[in-house]
Length: 304
Image (cartoon, rainbow, N blue to C red):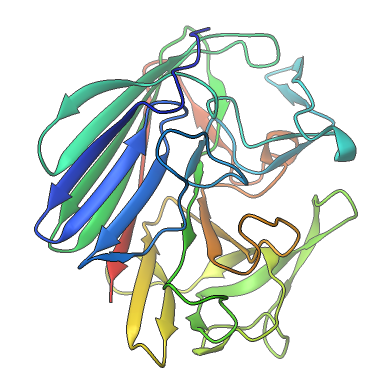
């Protein structure tokens, strides 16, 4: 297992009026701006992220019940990184060191070899490309099974988007989920229900108001290009930002962070996930990577 990189080591990229910074500690996205506007609720340069801001969630996003699962007849046990709920949460790379594999002015590719360890005895060659262009920021994750056996896999990331308002309450949200996962007291899914007729139906744009969100959505409505989009608009400042996901991301977690003082309602976390919480146990939409096989997923931010 590699040692963690210093929190302050980062790489900046730029294109036209866009700027972004990514960190080597965890490989996450620290900041993104366009036309001088910060569209990401990041964290200060030189510091480690809090509340998951911008972090990479590999090889699984969200929660895993009791930190245990079975795969191909073998039982595995991971450390409980959310001990108060007895869950393992958000994967294994958030405090791992990434390295710069390629860099140009407008793009950077970070790479990390996730080595076998107790609870996840598999090897993954991970690469994330952050690229700026006319369409905004694109984040492409390529995960390759570098070991001799098949392995379970899921991918996610944890950006918080914002438009500079004191809170998100006045902002207009459109989100594509037609169903929401029902959760128990440990924040683990126990079914799903349609959003139709509920306070969680944001398929048509409306003000977020005081709605508290910490919910995983699926049944994502998509455009002709296969992308699903979350749109956030400031009706007063006429600013906006869209977050899109490709077809590999079937779930979106929306989180207003009410109980976290550093992000509480100042921004909206929109977390792309290829699988739901607890997928290592349930197998639902879990990716099985055979030796040498790769999984590619992409999401992005578009200034409005």
